[in-house]
Length: 359
Image (cartoon, rainbow, N blue to C red; front, top):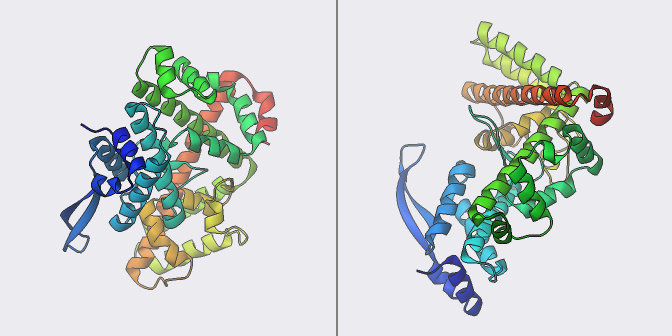
């Protein structure tokens, strides 16, 4: 059976191989209106790559049009075939391909669909479970580090007591080897494990670093601005209106819109607030967009930008519901950050250094 590496080697000799490698599956699915559509799914001759695409679809792309997703996946597949290092083993290539494809497609979603991105190359999904923070791969992580203000990241490391304080022994070992330029296969041989296990350990280390940094950054914003209290007051007032004036959606919509306009920073666009290498999550709108789901964001933005007009009762109710839900999620995230950083301050006994570290 051919591996992905075999297909890539063949492609390098003859580009027409891609026509054999890419296949499509047409499935009849019911849309939101109850009608049946024929949806075309991109598949390949490599089952492992198909599994990767399925995982990506389930995790990130629930609110993306299938045609767009097919285009992004095809772009990612071609990029993998063009840039893969065929000196690596088949298992290393498939692991690298998953990271590389995720990076490419997420970048497309950021640029074309305003995906819910809190910070540089970082995807956060909000659900009833704990927040999931996913960093695609080492290259993406390196880009994120470059985008963060050096002094802020240094203060974060001092605040937590270095990476050795937040990573397990194995996570720190794998992270250190990767930072030194080792391949995952070489690390596996050194540590006496599998390449797949090294990949999982490394991913968990990156997730932990990014999650801890998010707590630290959010804490700094809470201590330096009144954003948290402003949002908390709004959410509390909105809750009172919903409980006691349930039949006046026009008043609640007007109140919500006025609140957002009053807290709008005219010199910071939505796109700029989510652009790489920008750390602008300090205002009400930044918090709103950071914690809004992809589906809600796609509906919300045309109305917010004035491209569509909110006129019906149903539209006003949905507008208010999206804003309130997103800001409640921000408050939950901020409270988690406050709890986590407070624990760190007590555990490390750094009360006297806190003011300097968050400044």
